[in-house]
Image (cartoon, rainbow, N blue to C red):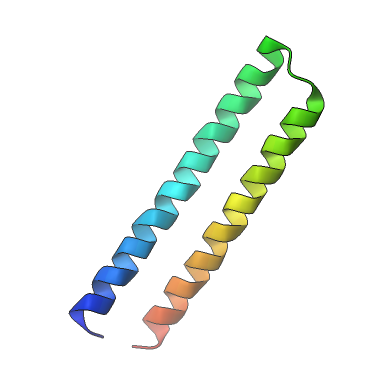
Length: 72
């Protein structure tokens, strides 16, 4: 595997890690702040669905990284 491919995989891994960490922090903040400011439950459901979409995107990227490493 070439040097450029390794850098691309590392960059994709860092982005995926940031998405996972950021999604978790935003989700936790929304769950903490939402009831305190009186947001209806439908907004909590919306935040949950957005978090699930972000995690699905991250898992697809993790699979792609794994496949790229297998192809070396």
